[in-house]
Amino acid sequence: MWQTTLHRLGLEILEKTGSKEALERCERLTRRFEALSDSLRLCQEKLRRVGDDVVLQDRVEKQLAQEEEAWEQQMQVREQRVAEREVELQALKEENAAAASTAIGSNEEEEEEIEEGERDDGDGDEDEQGQMAEIAELREALALRLEEKRDIEAAVSSLQRKKARQSAVVAEQKNKEREQSIDVQAEVAAAAREQVLRELREEKETLQRAIIEADEMEERTDENVRDLPALKEELAEVKRKKTEIQTCVDSLRLELARQKRKMRYMVDVQLLTARDTNPPTLREEAVLLHLLYEHEGEMGVNELKQEASKLLEDHGRPNGNGVVIRALYSLVANGLVQIDRSHGNGLVTLLLV
Image 1 (spheres, one colour):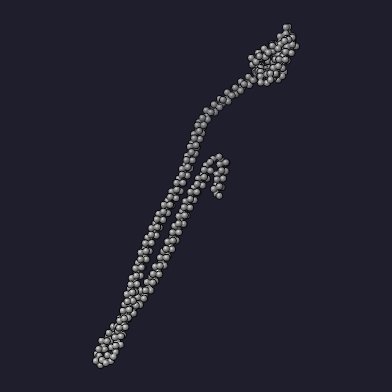
Image 2 (tube, rainbow, N blue to C red):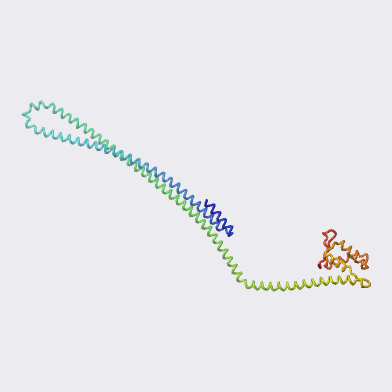
């Protein structure tokens, strides 16, 4: 997924630059994407619900339209039948009027045709009764048709009122859904704005910290620039003092080396000239220093005492063990040798080597 790739890229930038800004920005982008995805999912669900309601409303309206069309067709058929009956009734009325005018014209010949008229009275009465019966039937049919027409009109009015009520309910439902959709969209937009605002605040705080750090760095740089001449002078003075001290140290080292050489020379001279004096003037300290010089500056305490006693005997100084011990501690007191008791019976180290 691209989130994994983005996070890995942020880690690579962090490893290269050591700055967490890229990684934090990647995390902010991921959170913004998740918030927008949630908002989009809510809008899609709302759109699907609204779409289902619209499909249902279309079906209801289509069914009502079909029912209304069927009622209108039935009403048209019945009105057509009523019109036909009215035409038939009008024709019968005209026939009756024509028959009445014919009866008035025939009154002048009444006397001449009395007998013939008397013979035809029975038939005329029967025809008139038949016509009256047919007229009564037509009037009854017309009344029924009028009643049916009123029933149809009442049914149509009822359907229209029902349709109006349903339309009002549907319109109210649509308004509620529209208001809910607007509220949901407003909530989603507010959540998205809040998320973006929070991320912008975090970014602002990060930038403020970076600006403060940059200002502090600039102030330190300015202070260093201002203090640079004084620091250079101080550094030059330190270098000068260091040179003087180094010169003094070198001089002291040379003097120390000279004193060490002089000390060894004096020890060697003491041993060489000790036999020529009378009485012998060999000192125990010179013997100890000579032996330590011969053994590169280190000897065991027992070994040093034995060899020193032997050398003293060779120079006519027997029984010098106690004298050797006193001479050794005299050298320790003067800082020329030191004894390390952690090595067996003790290790004597000459500090002049």
